[in-house]
Image 1: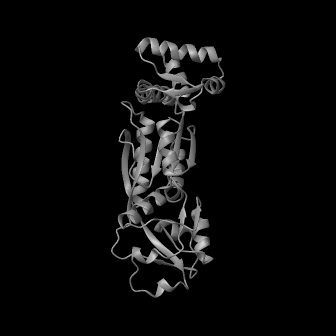
Image 2 (image 1 turned 30 degrees about the vertical axis):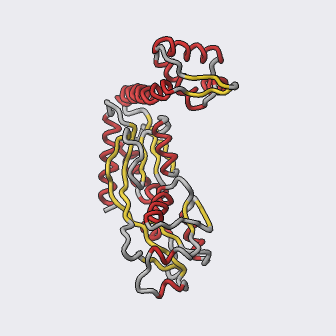
Image 3 (image 1 turned 135 degrees about the vertical axis):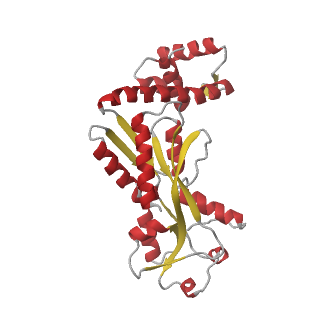
Length: 296
């Protein structure tokens, strides 16, 4: 069993195809097949089954994948730690839409100033995609607006945000002293895309009240949602910090929902490993420091 074999196995697992894995790794198909066979011989377990020319992972394969990701992530971090002895190296950060706007820029600016030779790559995506990217070792850290789903992920609480209702200034609900979640049942509602933290949060709130979220419009762009509300296409529940960044004075009204606690917890998450390099630990501290100022 070698690290090379584990890396080949991980690629086959993720692509569910030996030919595609070989092409991705720039090696021959027999080399991939041999690596999988060596792992199966070593552990005396079938990792994949071929049924009607398709590749299916076995339970043993699923278990090996969980461990292989940890092992290869640790090796990668070790390699980075050694390269960072002269302050070179790289770090990959993902962020949800809200934290990508209100927190990520200040974190990256501060950290890059401390480590000018460090290569930093960042991406803004939905929470579901970010957690998948972490588990596949495609990014090192992620800033997300809800607690992570996978208990194996390391996490650091960094603050809270709250959701508010935004309406066109002329909307009939603006005259109400109180607005409840039930008042939204008959309203055209605009939401963020499936997989986002905001969408998951709202679906949860609606389900608690036995209501189904049936949007008239979906978008991965918060500014687009706000513009749609301003154009009187509907109403929306959005993170208050995003509303403050993008809303136009007098064009929309911001309201709290009565009797609802629309507060979310924000986290920095990473792939748990027995070894965390000094640079990675410093990044965690930088996020905590910036978040205490911006998210407080």
